[in-house]
Image 1 (cartoon, one colour):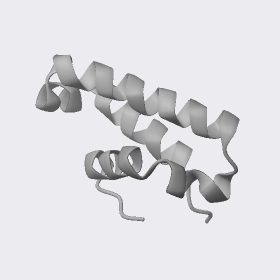
Image 2 (cartoon, helix red, strand yellow):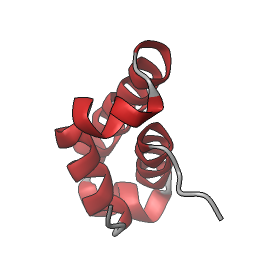
Image 3 (tube, one colour):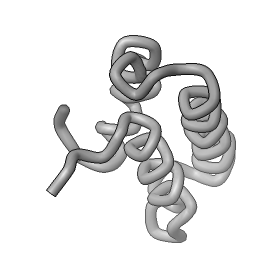
Length: 73
């Protein structure tokens, strides 16, 4: 099984934030904007970076996404 790309990790965290239980945990004032930030960053990575550079380009968004999903690099 292949590892998800960093952009995929960002999208997974954004999707988790949209789940009602997670959104409630973070609060709607944070969950919605945070999900949009992660989605926008994933789109930027897809359009502007080579997959092998995505981890380097988006260290902070990936740290946030991994904290939300509980995944490790």
